[in-house]
Length: 187
Image 1 (spheres, rainbow, N blue to C red):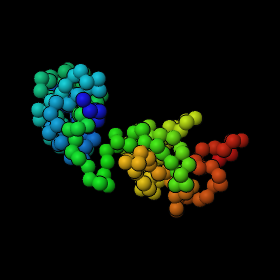
Image 2: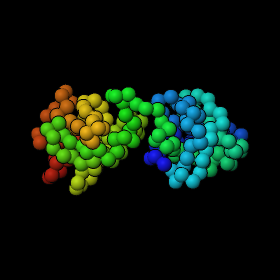
Image 3: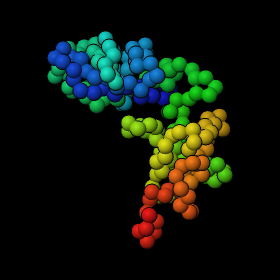
Image 4: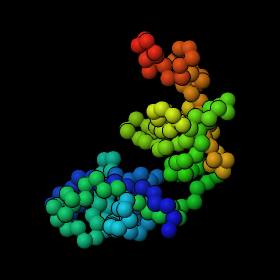
């Protein structure tokens, strides 16, 4: 079986007949209905979307076999996955976030930074997380300015560190992460 890709997360119960809030991570929120049964992360539980309607920033959905609020409440927080090969093919300049995990991260000068660990979105845009060989992970905005090149075939992403991004604040010397206090406690 191909790798699993997270396409949705079940939220709180909605009403008394087993509906839930469903947060989708697909370009078309209703695509989760076309993938067939969705899997829990462990692959042991399956969920099939019976109905779905648009709400403010999520779907309100029901799953086959879930008919009460109590059953729906027990599903809160479950991430739903599909096999990677069930997803539509991407265009030449498109990719899925999951395709970036594990790629080498290099600076615009070609220096190794580490590997892409994850892509996050905490509500203010995508964040790329890079795991260097030593030390804490780097969290950077996943924008064209900071990530000017994604080369999946070449197995790498190019990162323009914040001091390299044109027009991004003032130059603060050698520290590529100017918001982090420098040694000695001075910002």
